[in-house]
Image 1 (cartoon, rainbow, N blue to C red):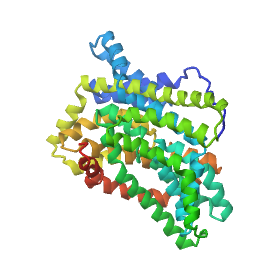
Image 2: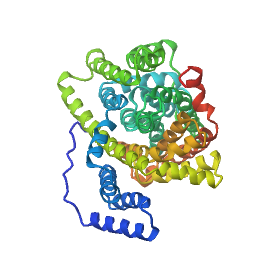
Image 3: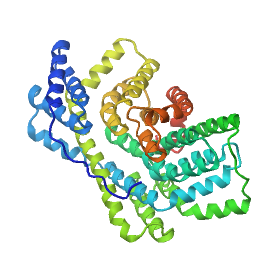
Image 4: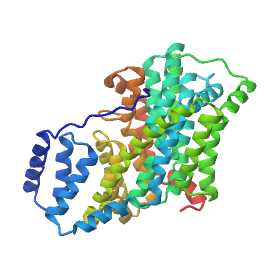
Length: 459
């Protein structure tokens, strides 16, 4: 991963933008109804290749100033009050912690520990990759960061040991998606911001599904390794395992700091995010000493750029949510579904299909911030648990990160493995099918998501 910060030149507006707006207006005229315009305009702008955040803000402002009587002052006020939520502060802190952990040697020590535990089974390094991804996910909150941190180290080692490159790429690409399901999770924070659901309850709700999915992905890797007789390592002694654990202990303790602190009530999820950033800095610079003090400004700049991008998307999504509420669109949609006699089963199936289709053209943050304000009120009218609904959306996002054309994990893994997207897509299919089966299980067995937070008294 390059240490340089990529600077993307700002291109002038192309002729595709007005053409997209005209196309959207034509669709609105044919369909009729002012409320349809917001979606058609948003779709038209997105089809031109305009960034999601800009398309979101432009379509909302166009609708507000031409089709409604909403005062400009209330729009400006909503922009500020919408991002004043305390939970939003968790996002830049978790991103900063992920950057420190990625560059601070934590991933390498976690891989060594995972290898010592499961390396002697069939597909040893592959299983170690799944376990290391699960451990790193529990401290980073980001899927691309997990793929980069674990994949950059373990994929070359797997190829050197004799594993097919496709096998290693499939394991790491899909296991990296655990980064947004195993808490802490940036995507869960965004869902919380969009729906006012408890972040702490969401974090605890992700523990059991995250462990189940990690086991399932590991089982697929073990089964294929056994079937094709892939290499396995010599069994580590308990002394070697203890040594590996001691070296990885400082990184693993971050799991206790974040989850233990939230559960015990010592601090809120946002305060836990701040603690994780400070802890990751201390471990990377002063304990492991793999990150030098002179590199810290670069880490701060990179994390600030990523945070600014996400916060800009959130700002425009707040406006979108405000417009949905002002026009009573979720309520109208819920009433229409109830009048049709559409129950929970059919609605959740429709939501899964919609989110999987959206995952073909959008990245997770945008999907959550656009669709959650629309779908959440309908789910509440149908009696669906808000925490269960949030986990369902997160698992959908996991699947979306692993398939083309915009699967973020695919592109990150492609940069590491030097494989084409098409070749990488074929490589991930066995694990992707397992993830789709798991999605069905999470969708229709709410207890998987709700049991732990209910047991802990967080719901």
